[in-house]
Every structure is written in C-alpha cells, then in structure tokens.
Length: 271
Image 1 (cartoon, one colour):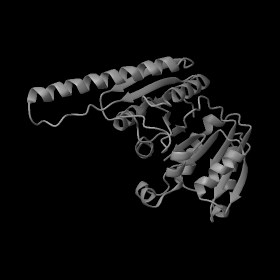
Image 2 (tube, rainbow, N blue to C red; image 1 turned 135 degrees about the horizontal axis):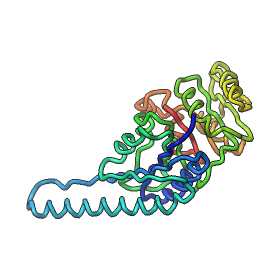
Image 3 (spheres, one colour; image 1 turned 180 degrees about the vertical axis):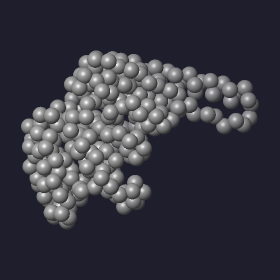
Image 4 (tube, rainbow, N blue to C red; image 1 turned 120 degrees about the vertical axis):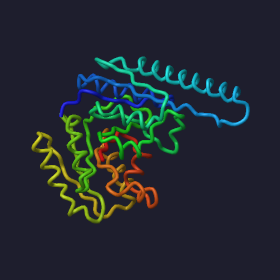
C-alpha cells in the first residue's frame, strides 16, 4: 500500500504543534500530501428574549469560530514545513463529522491522545474512539511531546480478530525497515491466537518478527502490553481497535480505551 495523503487533525490544544510536526515528517518520508483538517462548531444561542441581542451573540460566536479556525490554520502552516505538499480543510461545523467526511481521500488519519492528564484541547477536538468507529481508515494516535516517528522498534498487539488483521496490513508501509518487530499475544488465550501466523504474514513482506506469548499477565492486558513495549523501547504499537463493542468497553473497560488514554508511544489502530 502506498501512502499518498496523510490527514492530521488540528486543534488549539497544547500538543497540536507536536502532532502536525509528526505528520509532516511522515509526509516527507512517504512523499505524500499532508492535509490539515479543523472544524469548530458555532454554538447557537437560545432564541428567546430580545431577538437583536440573540443576533449579536450569534454574530460574535461566528467571529470567534472564524478566528479560532484561522489560528489553527496558522499553526498548521507553521509546523508543516517538511511536507512536500499541503492542503487545508476547515469548516465551522462539528469536528468529528467534518474529519470523517474529509477522510474519504486519506490513507491514514493522525490524531492526538486524549488522556485524563492531557489537558482540554477545546471545541475543535475530535473524539478518537468515535473516529475509529466511523472513519474507515487507519488512525495513528500521537501522544503529547512526540514530534517524530521512525517506527524502528514495533510491537504488534495480536489477537486473531478482523480488526487486528486489518491493522497489521495497514501498518506495512510503516514497517519497511524496522530494527525489531515483536508480535505479542496477551491473556489466557495467547497460545491459541495465531501469533506465529501473524509473524509468518510479516515474513512474507520481508519483515522478520519474533513472537511473545503472555498468557498470565500480572496486570491488565493494556498495562501488560504497554510495559512490554517499554521494555522493548518500542516507538510504535500496532493493534486492532474495539474487537468488542464500544458500549461494552465503555461499561466494562477494555484494552482499546485504556491504550487510547495512556499510550506513551504512537499507536496505529484500525477498526
């Protein structure tokens, strides 16, 4: 798969500049276009009371949306330097709906991690969980403070699901010359998940991978995976997203949600 268009979600959060720099570096590496996408909803006032006052509030809200989108565009243009080609796609509308719509032309979408300690990026933020369910493209989650992705040490979180198979395929362009690739199965069914088959698939693409089975994790599956990635000094995790329903994960918890909120390294997910 050739990557020709990398799409990055731009907001006014503290980590936005790092994210655009990371995406720009990938665009340079793949000789791809970098598309910055931003949206800011116009919050409509309640149509009660003095209609002239309502109109003034509406006009002020429209001006604020335009100003924030212009600020996001300036940030994108400032940080997108290495990208060979760029495009800017902005609108005063719902950020999730806008990004999903624009992603029809993307090969991969780059968004920021949204953990409890990551701060509030404001009204322009795209909820990552909902995006994964709707976008139909691989999504690269970038934690704050990471400005470059070499993908030299890759951990594949393997579970024999359609989501994991899709993610492994989608990650191939990033794994052209890794120093080390580990296929990891975590949990009581680790010996039956076909990790060796996933490694064989990678071997067919010229990627040597080792398999690691962790059937009895001392901590939760997501934490065990992240601890393994830390031991391997990994800079990219590849995994399927929401093998269970999002509702089930919201109620009972799950690896996808935990990784989305806590991953310290870039994570490529597909649903």
